[in-house]
Length: 228
Ligand code: B12
Image 1 (spheres, protein in one colour):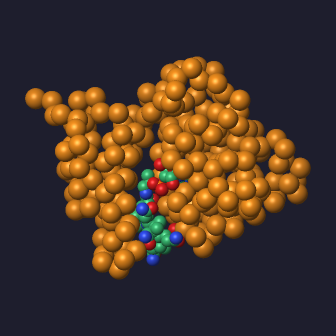
Image 2 (cartoon, rainbow, N blue to C red):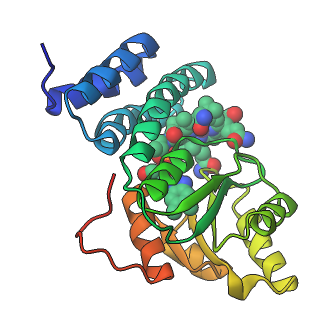
């Protein structure tokens, strides 16, 4: 019998992350997909709520790195399945542009960046995800290699934030800034910060990232919201 997709389902998903139950998480994710859950809802209403709680407890010193790492591993297993489903949900059509996306140097967080990459891809962008801990040279090399239109930079850490500005400064120095749109994101990234470093846009979640990207690339969608 197929399970029901309701508030209780999303709560159970969140709990698998909080309790570090990877097998239960994968099982629930697959059951949810079979029952027709929107994969982005499963990330945002389920898994992300769980990891946010874990992050709060970690910040408050209630739990420590091993528990955080265990929860992150469960979250990653769930989002890996869901990201693939999000990507596959996109219509096949002409590309709106090519995006190179990565997490900046000094930061290894990749779950949110990977969700953003999947949702961009589902919405008609070619996305090259170059991973985590990416330094200025590696961003520039990837932009050139892939002849990209857009640079996406992610960070969840406050300390390496200025790495984002370094990449933008280098783009200016080598005369590429006018050819590349820059979108930034991650929890410490505010609109003020994006303006200060000269980014073109900031995305606060995956849907917002596509909305802002469409604005930068001049894409008009007939649908009210981006596809997940
Ligand atoms: C999971 C996690 C980890 C995992 C990461 C696993 C992985 N594979 O990514 C592990 C355990 C490895 C980890 C390690 C550390 N972590 Co950590 N981590 C988290 C946690 C709990 C959740 C992050 C997450 O995945 N969220 C879910 C996703 C879906 O959301 P998201 O990442 O915010 O992404 C969304 C948006 O931000 C946006 N977005 C993200 N990127 C981009 C990019 C673009 C271009 C756009 C447009 C939008 C966009 O869209 C996404 C989708 O909606 C956060 C707390 C939190 N609630 O954020 C702490 C947190 C970020 N970590 C923190 C810390 C301190 C660390 C460590 C330094 C701990 C340590 N002492 O070692 C290390 C970092 C080591 C390093 N050098 O990077 C702090 C950061 C504090 C700060 N302000 O600097 C936080 C806030 C926890 C806390 N409350 O203290 N962490």
